[in-house]
Image (tube, rainbow, N blue to C red; front, side):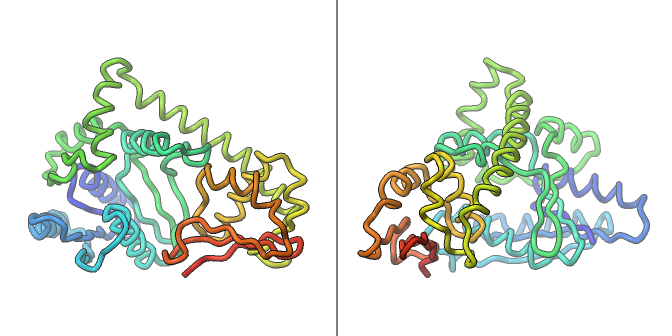
Length: 308
């Protein structure tokens, strides 16, 4: 089974049309559009109706989900809505199923800028992956090497109707600020900046795979019989830069929040040398916040635990 995440915007509209036209030539497959109504705009119901009409006109199956944003509190609304979307995607996918998302070349470059401004490392420089596993199926982004202007030209050529989300103009959102205020200036000076940065992202992906392969070997040499424990004396036998990579790999494999650069430096410079008989602890986040992580030292083990 194939799914397309369908917001009704130009990117997902062009993608849904393209996938639908392609799969008409293939026997034994089904296509379903997936629309998630975030209910954050006064036009949300109008956008949902647009998606229903678009699919009905082309005889495309459509699933719709309505979110209640009044239940969302605390952290960034944008991030929490994204988490809810991906949870729905994961729950919808069956074994072997694929869901297609409309992220494109310009999205990838914007993500790179966002992460660079936040001090990302090599892993973050990989930006958006073309494909990855999700639940029982797979998430795929076919337009990731396609520029936004080419998608818009395709939609115009096929005379596709789509919606315009006013929130994309709100520069109080970091991504919109980068898109509206920063990148137009960059483009004036370097017209092909997005294609060139796409090459950088590809190089970062290749470099990261090399580093990851070595880090996996290093991690195996410090691991113990329990996933949340590593051998401290073996860890500190590595140079500090490798210690950081091992810790990131380990924490990520546990599904915990990865420490930032400042915290990593504190761990390898100070915490791993703390006096063991005092049962030292190191927490990033806050002890009251779900998702925070606690490191402990017991005997010759470094232990990671989630605080819930």
